[in-house]
Structure formats: C-alpha cells, structure tokens
Image (cartoon, rainbow, N blue to C red; front, side):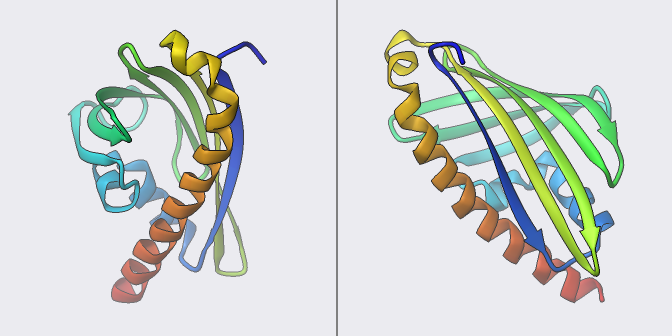
Amino acid sequence: MPIGQVAFVNHCDIAAPRELCFRYISDFTHDPEWWLPVTSSQRICGQGLGAIYEQVASVGVLHFSSLIEITAYHPEQSMAFTITSHGVMHCQVQYDFSDHGGITTFTMSSTISFLPMWIRLIAPIFKGLLIQQVTSHFAILKQQIEMLAAVEA
C-alpha cells in the first residue's frame, strides 16, 4: 500500500429490513445523526447515481468540508462513492447490504489517501484509530436504524 494510504473493512449487523437500512444509510443527510464528526450534510444535486453532497466535519484539530459523489448505486444492495476533502484526503468507499433472517449486514470498505505530508507519514497509526471510530459510529447507526424500524413496524 502506498505511503499515506490506509484501507479497512467494517461490518455492522442491524435488526431491520435491508430496504430501511439502505434508505437511511444511502441518504448522507442522515450522517450527522450517526457519524459524529460530521456537523452538517446537504445534497447539492441529483439523487442516486451521480448525486453530490457537501459535508462539514471536525476530526481533532482538523476542520474541513468534503464533497461526496455517488459513483455506483444499486438500491438495497450496494453503492460506491468518493469523498474529496480538499487538502486533507481522498476516499473511495463501498457500501454493501445483505440480509439473513431479519438481520441486515452493512459492510463498509474504505480506502483513504491522506494528502498532507505530515499525515501521510503517520497514516499507519491512524488506521487503528479510524477502525475504532467507525466501530463506535456503527454502534450509533445500529441504534438509530433499529429505533426507526420499531417506529415503522
């Protein structure tokens, strides 16, 4: 893997229908509810494939805005997108959804390329921290969607 790049995969089992999980997770305007560094998220244009969102996030001392572009979109199955945070990072992310007896497994595969040299040099250290953060965010996501599923039932 090139210097300054990290890749990882995370899974989350959610007691909710796959359709509901996909609908909630694929709408990035919900991100501030479960991805806590994101302070705001809005759709700039489009729906599904080609949609573009703008987000503002804070991670430690870094405060930045990002553009998200949906590059693949298969309702209730998968989607892919890029995140570009000018001067900070470029990410390629794949979301996959599968169901097994009323449980939806949400899988996120991410490759992040950090841009500033000082971050690139310590990127391997960030990998463990990022995985811990994603696990924490997924716990919130699971709770949010399961509460929504209970309301919709």
